[in-house]
Image (tube, rainbow, N blue to C red; front, top):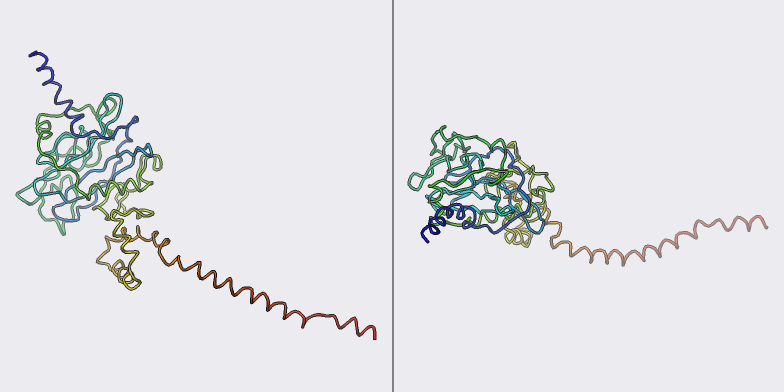
Length: 333
């Protein structure tokens, strides 16, 4: 009996690492390699970096890339443990990320920018303020001033060269360390509503799917949820095509505004102070093709069609003046 209990105690950490953190999605094929991308600058003091990852859509039976993004933590003092894929039992299981007082196990995956496979080196909390380690993270120093430099934490300033995207045979062979096991047992906070909206938005963008982009998404990272999209090289990417901005209800409300209200909204979009809101505005534009004014077109067509028969009846009245019928009569005289 004692030996059985001891055996259970030995395997518990591995089982907890692979199962109990929340494997709710599985796939039969491995996720694509992690793309290498440039991190956009942190736009606001207090935001935390959430690295990009491959999520899976069962309906499409395909992986789609969720861009890395700066987000606000649920509360001061919390750190982000990234999501990861783990291969076990013949399938690839998705372990969702979470917030907690310490960083837990994320499969040993090197996501870069402070997430080198274990822990986080991109910054530390000092009371209610977050200090950024600019040796590994990119911040906008015009708005973020609480920084320091510690190069000892550098593993690779971008995504690891072998691009391994999962834990297990064929991927990263890593096991949770004692401090990571301890972090697993702490109280966790689920991804924020903004993070969930961010993942949903990526799922609605078909260009983010691996079957479309061959594992090389054009939008690799974003400066904030609903903000500017960036290519792997760091250039601004094209706004997302089609509907499906993170807040669809807000978009619908915009389309239902009176004309004057829409004019005011357009003025706001053209204001240089709102430059980083431009992508969201672009997302809304295609939806205007389906806006209410189209409902007036059938009525206009019916009015035009009603006038056409009158125009067609006038045309025959003009032709008799040009008839050459009198010439043969003169020859007979």
